[in-house]
Length: 555
Ligand code: C2E
Ligand code: CA
Ligand code: CA
Image 1: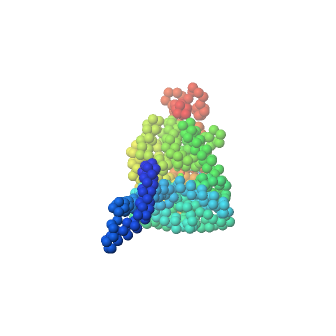
Image 2 (image 1 turned 120 degrees about the vertical axis):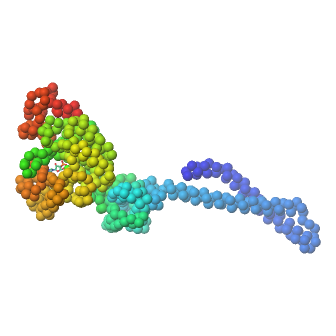
Image 3 (image 1 turned 120 degrees about the horizontal axis):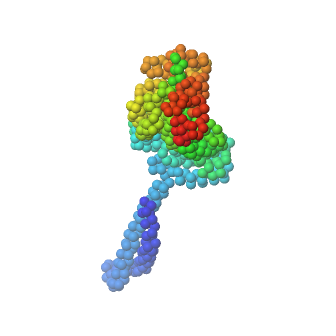
C-alpha cells in the first residue's frame, strides 16, 4: 500500500502539467465558443429560416472544433475528479491502517503516543489532568489456546466495545497489541474519584461473562492508572507509569485497578537489579540448594529433604526464593536455575544414606518445556543420583496450561522411578479433578493451614478434610509448616504421614546438612579412604571427599 502511494506521488508532477494544459485548452475553447458561437449560430439560424447568407465555413468548423474541445475538457475533468476521489480514499485508508488497530478500530500504540501527547498538552493548558489507563486481560492466553484465535479475536472486539462504552465522550482508546488496551481522557484534578468510577466500571464489566462465537467466556482484567499532574513530565512517562501500576494490579491478585505511585517505581528498580544480577548468579552458582527435613510422623525417622533455592548474594546476603523465583519465571531463567539447583543437590546427596529422598519444586513454567523430563533424566544420569529417590513437587496451577504435555513429562519421569507430589493443596482450586489428572503419589497441605491448625477452626477443618481425602484416595499426606510439638501431635492424631517445618530446624545449607547427617551417622562411608568426619564438611584443598570435590568442580 505504501509503495502504491509512493508511485502515485512520483508520477504527480507530469500529470499536473498535463492537467494545466488540458485546463488551458478547455478555457480557451470556452472563450472562443462564447466569442464566435453566438454570431455563427445566429447566422446559421438566419440562413435556414430566413434564407440569409450562409455562415462562414471556417467559423462553423472552428465552432465544431470548440464543441469537441469542450466535450474533451469535460470528460477529462470528470476523469480527474474520479481519480482525486480514489486517491483521497486510498490516502485515508492508508492513514487509517497506519494509525488504527484493524481488529478493534481503536488507535494503535504509535498513534496513541501522538494523540496522547496532544491531549497531555491540552490538559496542562486547561488546568486539567490527563488520566491514562492501561488495561490488560487476565489469562487471555488460556482462552486463545483453548478455543483458538477466532474466538480470541471475537473476545477482543467485544472487550473493545465495552471499553468504548465505559469511556467519557472525548477519550483516546487504543489497543497496544495482544490483550493490552489503553485509554486516556481529561478530568478535574480535584476529582480523581471520577477516574476511579470508570476503572471500577471496567473491572466489574470485564468480570462478567462475554459471549464470543457462541461461547460464554470468563475473563477479568487488571488496570493501572497514572495521572499527568503527578510526577509525569511527558506522555511517555505517563504511559510507563500506568504500565507499572498495571503490573502491580496483576501482582496483587488481578481483577482490580491500581493507581501508580512512586514506591512502585522503586520496586521496579529493585526488580530490574535482581533480574540482571540473577542472569550472572545462575552460572556462578550463587543460587544454591538448602534442605528442609521431611520427617515420618509415625516413626520420627528422617525421610528426606525438600530442596529450597536460596540466593547467596555477595553483598545482600541470603535472598529468599519468593523474591527471585517469580523473576526467573517471567524472564525464562527458571529452567536453568532449576537444573542448576538439581545438579548441585544431586551431587551433594551422593554419599548421603540411600534411604534419603529429595523433593524438588518444579515451576508451572517448566512444564511447558517438552524436553523437561529428558533434561532432568540427563542430570540424574550425569550425577548418578537414582530417580527413585527423587520426588517432584508441582502445584495445581501447573495443570492449566497444557495438561497433555504435563502428563507426558510426568509419565516419562515416573517411568524412571521418580514420584510426584501435589504441593500447596488447600489453596487455589483444591479440586478432585486435578488430583485425578496426574498420577500423584502424595498430597502436601499448604503451610498456611498447618501453621494455624491449633488456633483456627477453619484451618483445622481443612487439614482434617485433606487428611480424609488422602486416606480415601490412598494418597499419603505431607503437612508443611509444622512449627511446634502441639501441631505435630495433632497431625499425628489425624493420621498424616509426613511432616516438615521449622520445628525440625530451619532449612540447612549443603554444609549444614552434611554436618547433621554425619552426627546421625547417615553419611555413607567412602569406598577408598577412611570414614568421613565432620571436618570434611569444610574441606581443606587436596583432602576432598568425592561429593565435595564434585561440588567444587561444579562451582
Ligand atoms: P513451598 O514449596 O511451599 O516451600 C515451603 C516454604 O515454606 C519454604 O519457603 C519454607 O522455607 C517455608 N517453610 C517451611 N516450613 C516452615 C515453617 O514451619 N514455618 C514457616 N513460616 N515457613 C516454613 P521458601 O524456602 O522461602 O520457599 C518459598 C517458595 O519458593 C516455595 O514454596 C516454592 O514455591 C518456591 N521455591 C523454592 N525453591 C524453589 C525451586 O528450586 N524451584 C522452584 N520452582 N520454586 C522454588
Ligand atoms: Ca514445595
Ligand atoms: Ca508448599
